[in-house]
Length: 70
Image 1: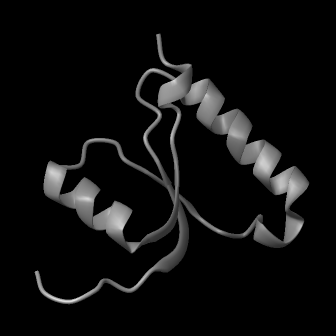
Image 2 (image 1 turned 120 degrees about the vertical axis):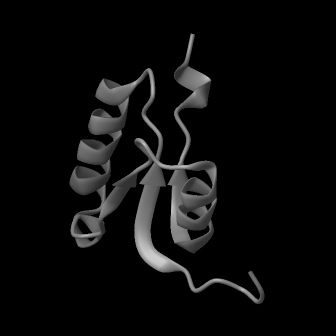
């Protein structure tokens, strides 16, 4: 892995224990930022650590739900 990765217009997220909150934030984003509604949301589900790292590195935005976790 050399060089910088190219950022994709996508939003990465890991819902784990909070899938409903992830869905709600996705809906809020679409409602509050209609021009960004077509931006894909990429879920980390069943990916290896390497795949998660690669997806995070190439995503323009990462939505963290950890502050909501128990």
